[in-house]
Amino acid sequence: MEFLTSMSTLPPPSRLSLRGSGSCPLLFVALAAGALTGCTANVQTEPPVVYTSGPAYEAPPPELQTPPAVVEITVASDFYQPLESYGTWVDIEGYGRCWQPRNVGEDWRPYSSGQWVSTDAGWCWQSSESFGWATYHYGRWNDDPQRGWYWVPQTQWAPAWVSWREGGGYAGWAPLPPQARPGFEVRVGLPSSAYVFVDEHHFSGPIRPSTVIVNNTTIINKTLIMNDTHITNNMTVNSGPRVATIEKATGQSIRPVPVRQLRVAEEAKSGLKPMASPPSAANQNHPVPRAQGAVTVTQPARAATSEGRPIEDPKAQAAAQARAKADSEAKTLAAEKAKADEKSREDQKARALSQANTEAKAKPAEARPEEARPSAAQTEAKTLAAEKAKADEKSREDQKARALSQANTEAKAKPAEARPEEARPSAAQTDAKASAEVKAKADAKAKADAKASAEAKAKADAAKAEEEKPGGDSKRQ
Image 1 (tube, rainbow, N blue to C red):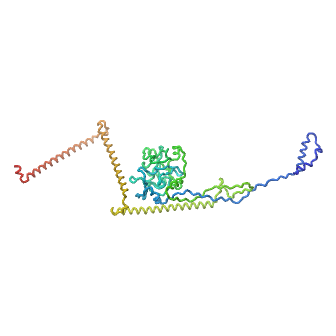
Image 2: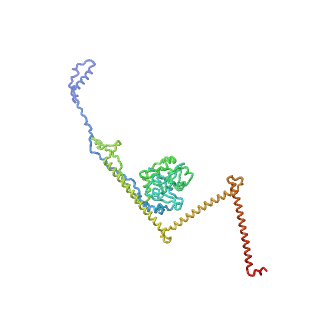
Image 3: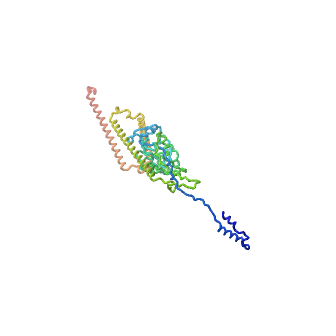
């Protein structure tokens, strides 16, 4: 630097007029003055960082997420083949073709073999029976005194079709009958015998026919009907007991699971091919890459939200919404058309069945086709049911007669003064009884007199006839 070279041009210290001890400060002042007047500094600085706009950032296309495929039921006949292996299809007047399970006990009832699972759509019945994927999530159940339980198929899916009762530490449910409309109307006046109950401590555990309480009047009187029904994602949901209540009773935390996951798992037993739903675009977050070790930093041309996600193109977003709306409308129209077609077919079938029944009734018994007559099994079942009903009626009558006889015996055993006042006959009753006895005696006397008169007349007639016979006089002689 030139600052060092200029230092050498200064006069030697001997030539400077310096006095005493203040010579050092004067030397430094001279040096500083020389530096300021005779030196120049050359400082080199680094170039500034320059930010430029690079090419516009293009996010990768969104990934398509396809929901789990489920079985699509559009008409009641979709159930015929899958359920044929587990039961029998029968024609029920007023409901058409219905289904009854095979190889079940006499005390069998729906919703008694499985488990209640908490889902994002309320409590869902997870059946342990092979036919449960259909009969507990579609249609309704009805209990007939002669036939037993039978299932009426319908095409709307739900986590469960039941009516709930809760109270007194118990939770109960009953299958909804066919007359219960889908939606918010679940109060159908079910009899108390239709409900089964479990203690709330065991509600979320396995349910078996041996663990449920059936037709218990004491528990029924402690419970109330729950009518918390709503629509979620076009699905009828009857929520049932509150999860917090069951958690408190069991002392366990219950985490809801996706209802679609349970549905897919159960429908795997049906043997039907699931139909995949249209894929939906996932809203992915793609961060902007940062340049490392470079002076120039490239910034994305697209704006970002406060969360750091790129803002979607309004036109593309509007187009996607329009496509989704069109797809939804098309699906709704297809479902409505399928329902209309199903109703038309059911109406035609009902008319044909009605006409066939009318013609069959018009024909004599020997002219009817063999298939129109009840089978031997049906006839035997009907006979057994009738005999059982008669036996039950006779048993009730016998019980009533025994109770009445016992009451009469006890009443006769008591002395008159020990009997309650209301058991003693009134004066009017005593008079009526006395009159009846007098009349009965008079009638008996009249009958006896009439009989004696008839006998006397008969003897007289016999004697007269004897006299009129030839040789009667000779006999008397």
